[in-house]
Length: 618
Image 1 (spheres, rainbow, N blue to C red):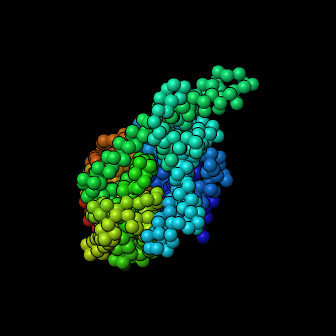
Image 2 (tube, one colour):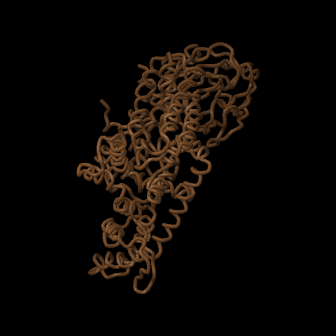
Image 3 (cartoon, rainbow, N blue to C red):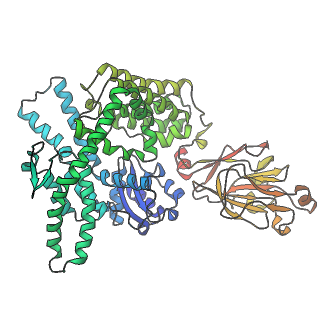
């Protein structure tokens, strides 16, 4: 049974502790942190925490991918910190702002994440109800249908109420005042004015638009509310500011929405909805191919949150969502690719990882375990999934398929598409999205690890290339007991045949000894490597060594680090056997498939196996 408390504690410690967290929310599979200083986060430690799939840093957020259990881990974080509860959706005022695009992505994800599951759950119920009507299992003139329709449709209709709360928490406004504003937008006597002519407010003409399912107006007005409240709290006497502030905010905010923000947002929404409709009417294959092919790429970088408002805007303006149809192809294609890995793989550990990832992808639409754990590390399956998703998405879009509910695309959510568009094209598109990546993965295949110890199951397993031209020997053959018995770290040794030392992977130079006899490197995933040129060569005081890099310098695999005069060093009586070892064994306890015999620099030397993979292999 998963230990959510242990995962929560490990993640919180790894990101730099509670004091380094500005805000925290979670989505379907990820803990989404905004950190005050990402440099204080130990990414390698977070990745090695049991229950963590990987870490993605995108959209101004530090995203810890958990999978289906993310709500449980989120809840446990709430028990040991002030984060993890409803109030954790806050603006990152003290954290790094980043560029405007990253700030927008961060804002959207923070505002929408808390309502995602309710939106998806009620949307799925709406999809099943629509399917029931399509197949004649229930009729729309019954009270049963009326009840089911109300409880499945109410949340998205009154979405501004929910967004008022989450936006208020993000912008640090009074959420109850925000709720009062949203309530006025949806008040029954106001909704009946939609479309009526000659409306005025104290002589100012305005056009009443529908705020049902709207997104832009409430977010904009809550942002303005947050600034107004700060001003009023600072200026009003303490005896009256607590009740006068909300009165004044509501008094001015609601008319501003009706007169200015609402009509402008309606124009923007109609324009975006029209643009989406134009693409899917005139070049549906292009829109479908983009959504089907690139959706999972957007997910990896957290950029898909920028498209979520478009889904709701399209629904608000047209009552349907054409964008979501091709996304079904994208999700099922990656699930099919990992199913191909499950079928083709001979490695028992790889098959055991692929099985649950396949089921999770097909049934629930949760593809992170498949993508980060298998498809991306193996490369080809991920590419095959993109191909299948693009072709399938294009076919689905050509068929004019759309959804009438906001759902998380998955096998279970397919009823959302039933009866909406050409069902034959939907079937063909889904079939292609599944069959193409599955067959490509099974037939073309992928480079499969030779044994359980070398499976790239965790994103932070890394390949160490040879830094030298020479001959590889076992570390135990090193004429230095501290290296030979592995007490300083696991690895191998190389007897050089030339005097050039190269970087074995992309890294930061953690230590460039002025004597030139040793170099310490730190991989982006946290692995720390020591290359010690010769035994006791520190006694040369730098003689015969020429160091080409400095501490803190970024280097790429193959960059020249040190030049040394091998003949002169040996003539001085020193053994040139060079240990290459991983020094942080708590994170990388094993090395896999070490090379032996002659080797050239740049050729694979060994795999550094992360602790999570080492445990899984056992």
